[in-house]
Image 1 (cartoon, rainbow, N blue to C red):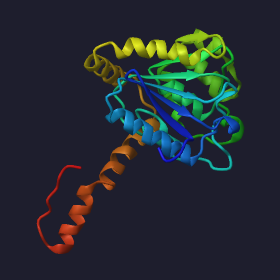
Image 2 (image 1 turned 90 degrees about the vertical axis):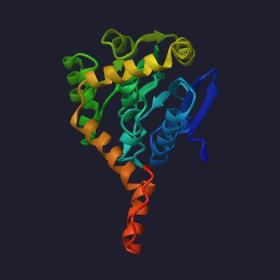
Image 3 (image 1 turned 135 degrees about the vertical axis):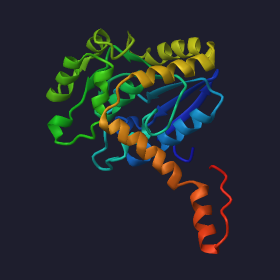
Length: 247
C-alpha cells in the first residue's frame, strides 16, 4: 500500500491487517479508514482464507477517532459494512479499545483479547454517536450493551469474555499468536462452508439502522463509481446505445 498507517501481511493463507500508528495510540483518521477499506477489499478478492485485524504496540488497539482528523465515514473501514467480506475475520486486541475500535471486535467473527485490554464506548460522554454500536445488542446481552454505551465506563478483558464479546483472554503480548492459532485452524477448513455459514449467521443477526444505512451506502457507491455509469452518460451524450459491462 502507498501508506504504512495500515499494513497487510500474508502468512500461510492468513491476512494480517494491522493499524500502524502506535505513537498516536492507533487513533483512527480518514487515511486509516481509506487504508482499511482498501485492505478489506484486497482480502475479499484474495486467496487468503482468514483475516486477523490487530494493531501495533500494546498500549491501545485504538484510542478511537483522532480528534484532529475525525473520520465521519468510519463504516467504510468495518468488514461486512464498508466492504462485503464472506471469509472469517478475527480481532486481536490489547490495551485500550475505544469507541470505533470496539466496532472491529463487534463485527469480527472471533476475538482474542490480551488480559490488559479495556473496552470503552465513550460517545455518550462526548456528545456524538454514529449509531453502529447498536448492532452489539445482537451479539451480547442487552443490559450489558446498555451499561457499556449509556455509562461510557470501561469493562475489563475478563468481563468482555464473560459476556461473550471475546472468545479468549490471554497473557499480555500473546493476543496475536492466539488469534493466529484460531486462524490456522480456520484456514484448514472448507472455505465454501465457512463462507456459507458466515453468510447464513450474518442474515440471522439483527442489524441496526446505521449498519443497514452503511450497507445501502456501499451498494449505492458501487453503482455511482462504476464504469457502467460513465458508459451510460457517454452513450446518452453521444446519442448511441450504451454497452454496459456490469462493472
